[in-house]
Length: 253
Image 1 (spheres, rainbow, N blue to C red):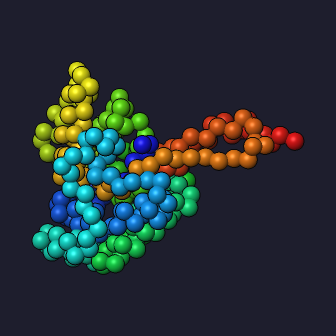
Image 2: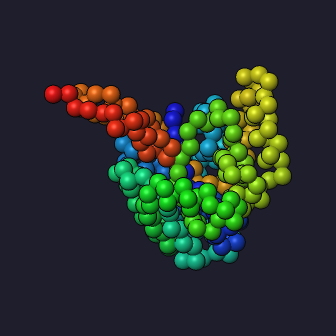
Image 3: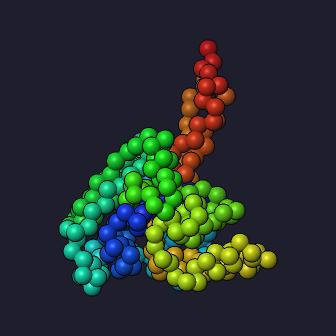
């Protein structure tokens, strides 16, 4: 199905109440992800309940269907006022779908009183902020991103654990104690059946704990005039394009 898109939290830089699962669940309920899939992505994407992009793993999940009233109830239970929440979402993509999705997220969150904005940085700034100093990184709070290669990636800690691909406690969220075991079950599954069941279990755990705000997944496409030769374009993580040797492209006379 391609690249899952999600909102990624840096718990080291955010207020402590973000570690309350009810707050993360409330944010998910507050966003009409189906409307974003159908409107912004024009039906090319679908809502996801976790980072696992295998439909066979989605049985028994909570889909957090759009419910702003439920979102406000959960925040009240957690003792958090909407106006005390600020999400300033960093992204590096400049395409219309990314900006449209972020505009929609901002709209829905502001509808229940959450302060939300988004801003673009260049890819070098993104990489330097996101990877700087590992778990001590305080240069970003919230990011919009995606991941490719899952669920078959060799290092699944990026989404399935709290290592973030950096090692150690990158996200700053102390996940359930058996989460690491679930990750290892995926990596060490001896059969296809065991692999699929391991994916199902870790997907259920992600769906329960909501370490990220899972949005949508879909395919990315590139289009060029037939006169452009040696053109190679691939969907990149988060939906942005990866341009393969653009210096070699040329227009045929």
